[in-house]
Image (cartoon, rainbow over all chains, first blue to last red; front, side, top):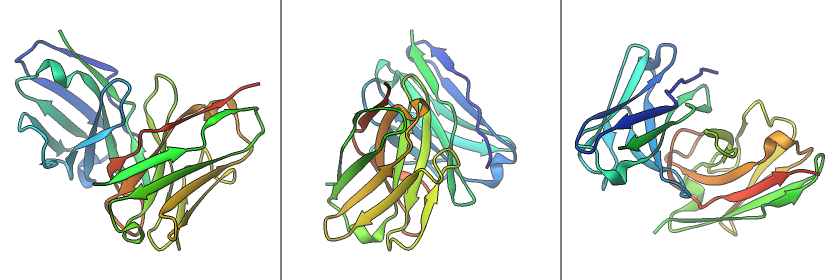
Length: 106
Length: 121
């Protein structure tokens, strides 16, 4: 099954843009999903099918997928966005997750 | 409102067994695949197993194949994970996750609160 690679951490200042990457072989041929997980909480789906925001998710969250890299972008990052973000793809009836990225708002 | 409530976690010795349960409510249980996803302490998410809504098809990660068994009881709206031959590396929080699809694991729109499994002597 395919592997997905994420940077372990990303730091961003309040109000700035955070970009979280997820890389994998021919990733653009698959749909990518993004989950947000705040400390001590369960994951929450934020982006599905590369770039669709789940209802209720703020518009500052967006997604894209091209070539070997999918990207979750948080525009105008707020303190409440500090969390771990996990990318996920589907491949041959199995689910693959990236290692997760901790976003710190400083 | 969709709710998923896991139970059954705890401390078990290496080589031992444990059965996790996930009671579901708020949706038509038989219409969706159900999955188990785990997270080792300080680590990322790892998909473990999934089962189709009809219970005809099961899917497993290579790391648990032959040791774990997923099942579901539509009369109780509950999905189970029987874990045998447990190893230290199985130590994790185990989440129950509802799929968006009926047939096979795809992606997950609702998650339970998780139950901690610790494998240690």
